[in-house]
Length: 136
Image (tube, rainbow, N blue to C red; front, side, top):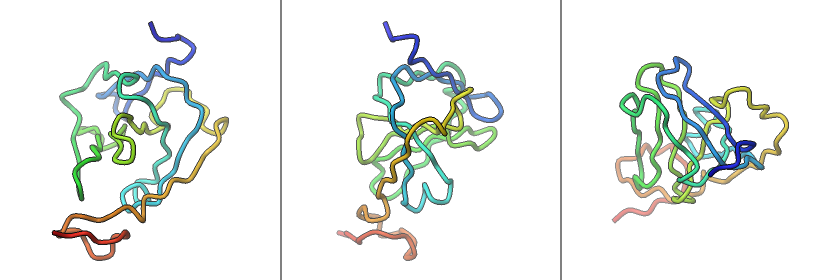
């Protein structure tokens, strides 16, 4: 059974998607990839088994690009990014800490992560997106 002291409840803006995280949050990350920069993401990393969608699974919208390895989930009603399956750590989710109820993001250290230099492998990707190109 998960440690109740590690339980964090969260939701999107409209409340259609609700979830819980049952792992300690000891570090936050920002990322300089094109997607995280545009959505101004601050994320907590959690193992796959530590995230449970409590309501609104059918309201989640999936966004993928480039290698299609990362899976970015947004509420299809209000559009808020709630979490994503990480490309750099596919056995973990990155969770939008601003979706966690009552979470004090200022109390946790933030580490910048480098995503801008990850390879761009989609030949249809916009030319202004950063990263080394690997086509073919």
